[in-house]
Length: 320
Image 1 (cartoon, one colour):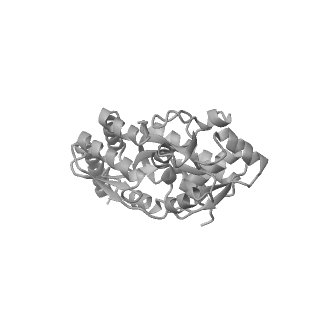
Image 2 (cartoon, rainbow, N blue to C red):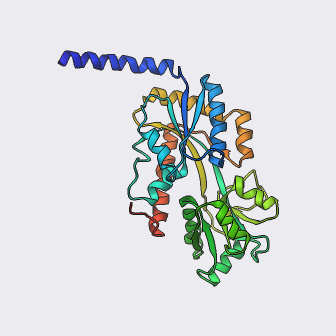
Image 3 (cartoon, rainbow, N blue to C red):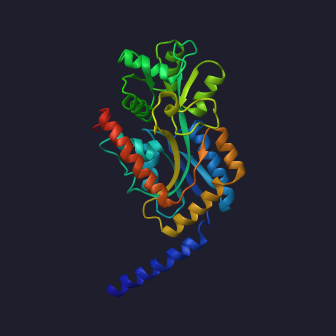
């Protein structure tokens, strides 16, 4: 029995390097844990298309939405660790879900092997076209003068935490009003029943250019190339260091051989450095940010700590 186990171990040890050398020799499954047609899906499909060109294999998109992206994340966490099932993971998947829930069907660190950061996109803070607030400074001053007198729309935990971080950093209290989706929230926003919207810049900025809203600030440390005239929160409200983004990354199931992780990382970095993909992502307000697996792991760790602290301070941790 001992010899048999030794022999099996030797076969596996020899097979893993061989698998890494030939990887990939079949199509990859690219899981996007959000519905088809949404902003995340569009970004993910562009990445998958360019990655397919670099790898020389089809990269087949599989949308698995539901339960705040938990369904898709769980599907990848339990997939074979052979490098052929890739998760297009967002900040909500790897940071926000864990920060706002005491129980989660996957562990954002232990369930996945990090591959690379893909890119970052800001949110834009909006008020109505007839709002008395023309700058974020105006909004903050009004919120300080009348605590709880202003309201913002919440359609996701990501938006809720970003708004609560602004509340915390600025020393204000703008009240959250939950909505089932953006369409419902914007209906009340346009009717004047909601004072403030936080929206990803790809969907929020066109509302500014069409004069249906005023863009007060973007939430990242740097101005967005998509909306260079819109100041950052740090600039507009004198809050240095304020930096909130929605981010995208690629991860594999935990236990994937490091040689395969490294191969996919090299291919993904090459894809993200291609002028064509850079242009597509930039048009969607996404700043490409390829990284090493180690850099992504450190980034996720920092985001987990940051958002967990915000969620606890705002009493937003769900006991599930």
